[in-house]
Every structure is written in C-alpha cells, then in structure tokens.
Amino acid sequence: MGLGCRSHGRQFGQAGAQPASACSLRASPIPGRLLGQACSFGWLAMLAAFPSPPAWAQVQPGSMGPLQRLPQAQTQPLPRTVAQVGQAGTGADTAGLERSWQELDQQLRALDGLIPAEPGVKAIDPRVLPPVPQLLLDANAPASVQLNPAKALPAAPLGLPGPSSLQAGPVQSLTLEQALAIAFANSATLQAQREQVAAFTAQLRATQGLYWPTLSAVVSGSSGQSSSSLYAPVGNTGLGFGPNFAMPSGAFAVPTGGGAYLNTYSTSAGAGLQLNYALLDFARNPVVQAARAQLGAARTTYASQLRSLQLQVSEAYFQLQQADQTVRINQATLANDLVILAESLDLQRAGLVPRLNGLRRNAISASDQQTLIQSLADRAVARRQLAVLLNLPPQITPAARDPIRPLARWPLNLEQSLLAAYRGNPELETILATREALLRQRDATAAGLLPKLSLFAGGGLSGSSTSTFDITASGGGCCGATVIPMLNQSGYDWSLGLTLQWLLFDGGSTANQAEALARQAAASSQTYAAERNAIRLRLETAFFNHEASLAKLAAARLGVTASLEAFRDVKLRYQSGLSSEVDLSDTQRQLVTSLLQRLNATVGVNVTYARLLRELLPMPRDPALPVQPRLSLDGSTAF
Image (cartoon, rainbow, N blue to C red; front, top):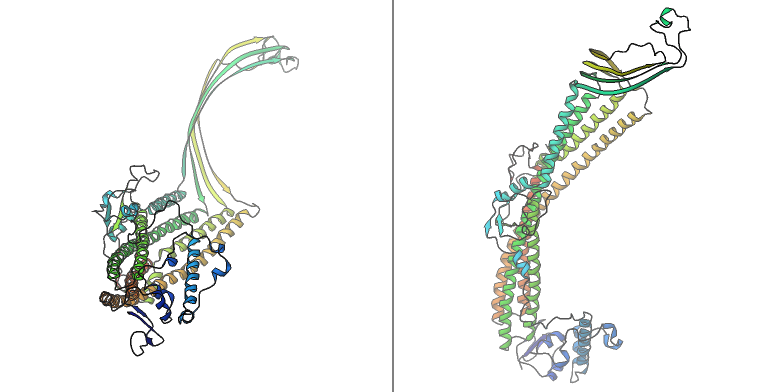
C-alpha cells in the first residue's frame, strides 16, 4: 500500500526484518482506519502522511482562549514514550489513539491561545516571506565610492549637526590603514590629550620662571581738593613765649577768637621700579621637577591612548568585516532555502514527499530570514560604530574595503612578548611619572617649613603741585602757619634690603599635607604592581586566544570542506528521493554552522593579533610627531 514503517525490527509490506528507526512515507493519502494497523512510530510521522490535516487537526492562530480556561481533563500530559502511543492505537480499535490526538489538538489550541491575536494583522501566506524593512536595506547599501581622507574632517567640536548634515550620503569604503590614519587625525579624545600636553608644557615653563627675579614697574597718580576752616577759642598771646607770640606783631601770635578759612587743591604723580628675587627657596626645585613629571605623565598617557585607539579601530573594522561576511552567509542560506522550498513544493505536488516537508521548509526559511534581518541590523550598527571612532562627518557611512583574511601568526613567543611589553610600556611609565610628581610635590610642601631669603630693591621719581585759594582771616587771624598760594615739589627715592621668612608654627598643617602626598605616592606604587599584573594577564589572554583561534581556524576549514561535500551529497540524495528533508535540513544547518565557525575563528585570529600588538606597539610621546599606522610587528622590531 506504499506506507513503510520500520520499527521494532520489522517493515510492513516487505518480508523480513530491517532494523531501522525512521519512517518512510512514499504514497498518497491513506485511509484513517489504516492508522491502527501501523507500527508505533509517533503521531507526528503519521500526521505527515496526509496532504492536508483532518478537520479536527486544523489549528487556527488565536482561535482558543488561554490554557487555564480549559477543563482540567483536557490538559493531561502527552504519553511519554512512542511505545505508549503505539500501544494505545494497536488493534482494530483506534479510539485511544484518536483521543490522544484530540487531546494534543486541544493543548495546541490552548498554547496558541496564550499569544493573543494581533489586531490589524492580515492573514499570512506561508509561501511568501515578508519583505525586509527598507530602512535596513538603505543602511546596508553597498559602497559606491572610496573614502577621501581629505574630505573626512570632523565637525566643529561645539557644534550640533543640522537636518542637511544628517541626511545619509553614499556609503564610502576604506581600508584598515586608512581608518587608523583618519582616527589618529580626527579623534576627539586624542585632540583633548594633545591640549593637555600643551597645557602641562606651559605649566612647566611657568615653574621654570621661579629661577628668575621679578621686576615690576610702579606708577601712581592722584588729584584732590580740600577745604579748611580754623578757629581758636583761646589764643596763645598770654603764654609768655616772647614777642613772636605777642600781639599785634608776633608772627605766631593767635588772638582769642581768631580764625581762618582756605581751599587747597593738590596733584601728585610717581613712577618707579621694584625688584624681588628669592635668594634661598627650598621649594623651587621640587616645584619644577613636579611640573616636569606631570608633563611626562601627560605624554605617556598620549602614547597609551594611541595604542588604545588603534586597538579600538582595529576591532571595530574586524567586526564590520565579520558583519559583512555574516550577511553574505545568511543571504546565501536564505536563497538556498527558497530553492529547496520550491523543490519541496514540486515534490509534494507530485505526491513524492509529505506535506510536512513543505511546512518544515517554510519554517526554516522564515527563521533564516529573521537571522538575515538581524545580521543586517548588526552591520548597520557596526558601520556607525566605526564612524564614531573615526569621528567622521555625520553624512558619511564607512564600509570595509579590505577582504577578510587571517593575519600571520604572532612572531614572538610568550616570554619574549612579556619582556617586550614591560619594556617602555607607556601605561607603566605614566604611573611612575605620576609617582614622581607626587614625591616632588611633597618636597615642595615640606619646604614651606624651611626659611626663605629674598632680596628686594626699588626706586623711583615723584612730583606734586599744591595751590591754596579763597583764603579768609577772621578775629585777628589764625593759626600761625605759612600760606603759599602755589607750591610745586619733586624728588626721587630708592630702597634695598633683604627679607627672611621662616614659618615657625602652623598647627601641623604643612607637615600633614606633605604626609598626605607621601601616602599618595606609596599608593601609586601599588597601582604600578596592579597594572603590571594586568598587562601580563591581557597579553597572556590574547596570546592563548590567538593560538586557539589559529587552531580553531584550521579545524573550521576542515569542517567547511566536509560540510560542503556533505550538503552536496544530501541535496542530490534528497532530489533523488534517497534522503529525507530532515537530513537535508540538518546538513544545511551544519554547513552554515561551519561557515560561521570559520568566520569567527578568522576574526578571532585578527582581533587577538591586534590585542597583542596593542601591548608592544611603539608610539610617539610627542603630539607634534607624526603617527604612522602599523598593522603588524616583526620579531626583530620588538627588541
């Protein structure tokens, strides 16, 4: 009758026993009564023999309510073994098997009802895949031009993009070397560190001025007017001081009740020079040395940021290559799905395969399309991540131009790599420079308790003009002073001396500040030890993962070769009716997995190489020097 079932070592319709575990369905629909005569091979394979399911097996999405609304008797668990299902339906009576199927149908309806129907969603044709969003297609457009570094200048640091600049332009491709050169020139982080280096350079020059004296020019000028009213209620004529104090001719005689009124206007100006020089200052040398150490720390930080930026750009570029290749793999997988789906439908219409094959291929195609859509989104994000690292204008979308291929094996062994990583490491040098700056600041603070000897000198010219007017005497006059209507005066002055300043008591403030700086320097020593261990851990992690990625790449290449041959064979066998659709699906999945494993291993080789290079790559300390991107390291250049 065309229904062959191999189970319990026996095949119906043929003589003899054939040990197998799969069911082969090679005929048109079978009557329902024949179900009881079949061997116990499970409800799913029996259901696949029908071109279309019976009425009670047609499940409409969202047609049932939640599972908890069903009676308790309708939610019994399925039989645990295939043998139990076969025992329930053997013999002439298939009522038990049909009841199990009905219970299964009810449970499927209940599970489908747990997901409420979406309003406004039209019925889905399983033969037609939904379209990919146009936004993703636009973001994943292929590169049309090559990126010109001269036109990749960053936007103003304090500006915001406008509507016109946010409009996406053509996708522009670039190589990894170009990406590194653009990042070194455009990076906002590097530019900020360059400004920090310039600031510490200026600060060092400022502290070096402490070795020189200070010379100041002093200029002053003033103008003012005053009014005076004099009155003597008791004169001096009776004091007996002689004729000069006797009226009426005494020059200094002031009678009782005598008075005077006058106005005075004066103008004065002066100019001079003032010199100050610290002859003995114990804080001067430590201050200069601390500023020089801070400048060294800023420069080594700049070199460390160059290393980190190269690693970030390299990883972003490799991830973009991985995203590109993942999209290609998923596109090829989906295209292959559609071809196999069309073949399955043709075989189904010819009655050579069950309806289940077409439904399974529909589900696989839909799943692979979801994977493709997500990979498109991942590639769009990877492009923007690279654009942000390169600080490109908003309208430029970069794409990877270099083909993805593994880099060479790391040229140094682990011991050589560790020794080279420690030698001249900018991160370790930054900590040492910071520690040196703290120690010199401590010395400068402690010098505040020591005497300070300074020299000062000054000299200048001065002049004034005084006029007296509206002079009025009353009661015999007052007060014996000489009144000059106009008086001009000029002169010069100079001074020279030494100043000794010695702090004798400040409540321990200066000593405690010096102690605090010494403790911070001691803490930086522990930071050095922690960073040294971190460098070793990073390098060993990258080294071992690099070796593992190389080994995985070799295994992945073998897996791709074998999977590709297996897929070709199983596809021919499926088209010839010698293999089932399940074998085809499993082999296809294995091929896709092998391709992704090879891709991940290739990217792993490149990323780990870039991480190793980050620990050893020499970088300039001076921002004024050019930075040349280096993508590899020779064993001789590390020593």
